[in-house]
Length: 466
Length: 156
Image (tube, each protein chain N blue to C red):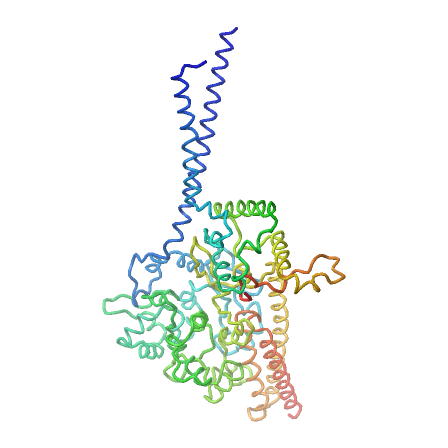
């Protein structure tokens, strides 16, 4: 009995020792794991980036840049993802590799107002930077209508092309490429037979390859902002020399997200900012130039087409006034290890309320979203009313023409048509559904309704006289 | 009674068993600047880099002359202070180790209340009339509701 008890005690002793060993081993494992974790976190804080490859002014391929700046490249690649907000990118499924939804089917009034113009053929919702060049090739506006090489100014990483054509001079190259037919410009090859245009909007367009500092490269923007600053009293303005870093965080976007036109036979991409950025200031510029985009197929009115004046509209808004740049909301900083990295997945802030808004606004995401949607819903309702007023005016002018009114009779109505439609398009083509400057856009839409109804009255008066 | 030899080897085994994790633990503690957490030095709050923006903001704020992180973010009574410090420390280091927190970081409701108490502690003479105004059946006036950027924001 005694022996058995001793044996049992020894067994228990061994068991205890084994358990203690396992326990202590477990604790050691946890401690070491913690130590390595702390070590890794400390390493994160060490280095900003490693320059593994050299990038130069000729490195248009973002994949090469990605070896030095993988974090930025990863997020840039995500611009290929389909995203949907209440008013933007509707109809895009996550697995849908095809083109974005046709705006023309969703809002049939667009077909009416663009009658006779390429935008009545194909006018789709936005997609990310990744597709800028691809979508340009696929749109019926380019495949079915002759377009100039001017389009390359924004749809591609174009500096190598401009320098090649201009024999080193970007400005000269830009002018010559703008005047070429689109396909010819798109398919240009260098002396070694390498294609010069291969990449959508990418690193080189906004970053200096030597210092990675922000810079603007689109010649149209550089000329446009210079004209605007001259009007405001600053002569010889050069954004790459004179702009603050915070200004550059909007200017790089303003290189393309703006109103523009192709000036003269050279089709030089020109930003109509010499009078200012407001809708009537740009209109006055066009009137002085005597510019017309196209003649409306139903009414015969000479009309202006607004492009996507995000930069101009943002400039009239409260965020701009508060010094908030495009990148603050569309490319907010995110923490990657110890680094602050600009999110290069440029997208609607509605998809990223946390980083986009909450950095400044200490309110819940739900509340923030509700506020944005309230602005957008009101704006959308007003836009629909303005569109209705415009199509009513078009109907009235068409009726007047049917009743026998000629161009001379309809002069007053046509003037109202031009004004109303320029304003309507300026608002509708702008990609924020009212958010960039709610009050300014509501003001413009009120003018649309006024001009459209006046035009309608003029046309009806003419019909009665006939 | 075990023989002296066995006892000595058992003691050695025991020492090894506890000594290695104790050593690793001590090293980890020092390597992670564990002692700094016992001090009120604001630099301890940026040992990890999550609060860099708040620290940078505080460095440029008006409050930097008079109030460090802990003066606003911890209670002032002895025991409560250490309990809160331990609770914050545990929560923050767990989150940072597991990397499972929301950014931008957000203060919890309880800690926000704590800050409010500390606002009043210093500014009592000034805010006494507002803070004690009658009709506050639904709780105290929240300083931070308006002064969101005090301490480490644009408002200093």
